[in-house]
Image 1 (tube, helix red, strand yellow):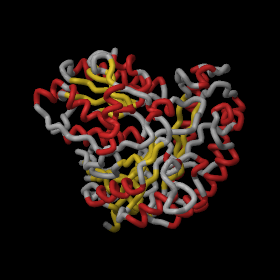
Image 2: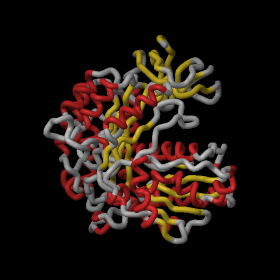
Image 3: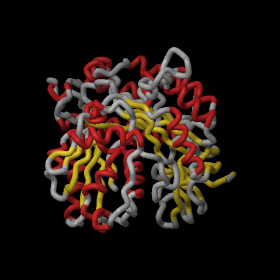
Image 4: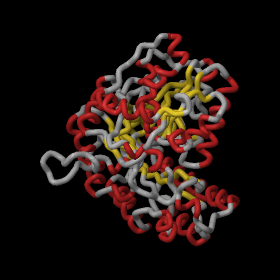
Length: 471
């Protein structure tokens, strides 16, 4: 299994592994020795498409006899293009990702030879099976792609304990997006915003808690829109909202730590910020996409907020949670972005209490309004702007991390490593992640999936070094 892209895609990959495990398949040591390889793709940029194509070619060269199943956003956007790549046996778009296990069972030569057990579809998938299988398969049963906008419910496979997934499982509770940012292809490959029901979300989290997990990350394509498509909430005159989901998880599960993935600026309500600040069971970590600090560019992007609005949200989060990690996505080189626009973005980032950045260089996506805009920024200029912001982000992150030297932090252990594997430790160390999203190298050999209080002693090569004081 190879996953590319966002947390939602990673969560999809975990669900797919569950489907394949139900068929009796076991994870191979590598794609070079596997009978079936699933490539779960992203298509947010041209580079993402290129990465997926390169991976497929690499897999085929190393293991020409394996069956390659390609799914995800690139498979949904350009199925024929993907199917033409060497070694691809089937292309299964997002429209059929929840049926990947059944499709594999029905069409895979490898699985037929092994006489893998057939696993019935969930009741929800079964209701759609006749229509989907009647309309989707094309090209001699190689393509399984249909209209993603026909989906009105979030079809999610059950959570399971993935091999090697010992900490911080990722649960997707929302998919699709109803925004129409001019640069983004994702709505056309993910469909309308759809939410996992509150009951199912709580059930899945309780299963994870029962399996021993201490932190769960909830994710989505537009996570803050969770609930807007669900029935009216408990007799009240409105559907549920994201704050209702967070509050219910705290009230109705024994989960030790809930971490929220990326949430758009307009969905950071005062109520959500207050809820996070009050509860020690929510990780002190806020990811708030910015994209640009230029009002003019934000309008060209069709973003639903202005720079002043973004600043207000970030300042409220920082005031409520002084030690929180606050990250942002930033795009450079958008069509029409001039020097003054870029300087507005750079200055805004410099002034705001952001602690890390994800910097992206604009990539034209066929079918998006931005691809046809005038003023395409030369690649050389876009890459230079990206370099400037990456360096700025690195400096801000270093300052934030250094502020914790000599202080006590809470962290969850991820894995252990012996001397020589980690430049931060002279002896046995364990890898950990702090509540506020900082890498920590912890002296000693600790089993994974434990919350530990540690004293930070140093910062070396982007990793905090600490010693456990309570566990």
